[in-house]
Image (cartoon, rainbow, N blue to C red; front, side, top):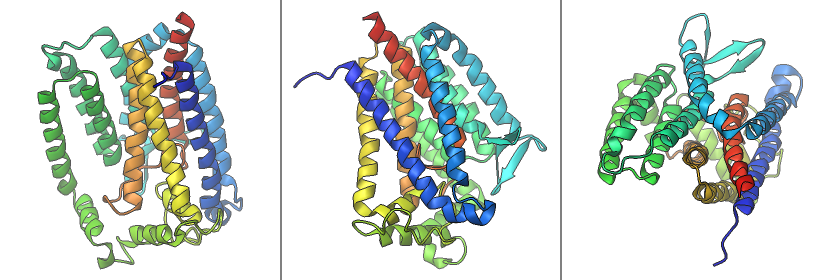
Length: 369
């Protein structure tokens, strides 16, 4: 079989991301136009804001790609501490803003920022920098990973205080996957996975609202006009799409039937408008990103580049799986968007920081050869 060059993988990786981002613009407009017109008298309100965030994310990616890789590695811990501080600030009354019962946002100069999106990316970069400085001890992998797991635990506690259960789960699963791929002992991985599953179960029933979500997930038709309304409307949208969909911009569920249609449930609108064929193509793009991301990471000669690439790929794919599972009623609802597709500037900015680091490491190796 012919070997694929690093440059070809890099092109595939970034073209796939561009295709996803452009697809996101199309469906953010389609899903939000009615809501935006009702709220702001401008059907393009949300897509304009997303476009500004996308341009800013592209600029950040390019800047980080041009920095010396050594500088990027040195500032990774500083960036992590800043992101952690901003995420903690959301918990302070009067500073953090509460939306839909969650305290996840800061409002700065007229713009909203969700620091947890930056925290995920900065933690992965810190993790990559840490492993680059402290190679894995195959005899005692716990010695390498224990400090990281403690810091991860602190991050998850802060995320759960917001509360942001979905982000905590996504970040933890990403770290466990990296732990396994980078040579973690299978015995330690099994114990960590067991602790994660038990901990997730306990957290799922510890809070009354989470327990209600589980009950509604099991049978949303018990409360079709209340707690089960969201998932029922999502399933109606997906079922209405059939094979070919109703046509782009022809969704009926976006007419105030389906809540959060341009954020958490944008997948349902895409399924309604493009049908099984459309969502299959969308999922194929994410699978192509997974394949090219893992292959690109294997071509990296630096630990920092490989971990950053794997971290970016796993964060995107795990969040994608979680979002689609929520939209299709396979897991209880949680506030987590579809990467590059859902409306949300903070998500784009957070991913752009990781993306710029991956591009930097990849280009650095190409020039060194």
